Amino acid sequence: MLFQALEHDVYRVLMLTALKTGMRLGELLALRWGDIDLQGETIRVRRSYKGKHEAGDVKNHERRTVDITSDLGKMLGEWWGECDGPSDDHLVFAADDASCLTPTTILRRVLYPAMKKAEIPRVGPTGERRTFHSFRHTFAKRALEKGRQITWLSRYLGHSSVTVTLNV
Image (cartoon, rainbow, N blue to C red; front, side):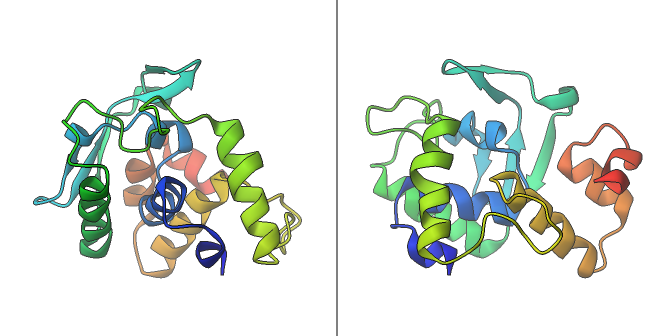
């Protein structure tokens, strides 16, 4: 329902990528085409958006490689084509002027209005407010339901320890 409420553009691709990889918003905003290996079906997480259109190290300095499904690889390949085949140094999720998107715009102008249109309440069944980070939590929940080990999930998400993963 949520993704039907989003137009097929940068925001829809961004949010589907978040849901299918568990990557943090800052990591996605700093992602460049050269970080994606469509043939090998991986994304190298090397930097994170730090504000004011600057990228820095990822949280906890936990650089990692994220596997992507073939359907996500296909979607990202199509997105690359829609973006006119940008070079490796271009942002994957950029504004019309090729600058970095901002979290405020993504949340207030896109995600929350789409949630309202899809009739998804901002507060979930556990009483927690739904945010962009909810995509990450959903990814983690699904991975565990599919039998992934907590140690794998902790490394995959770039957590500093298994304890962090268990506490979240």
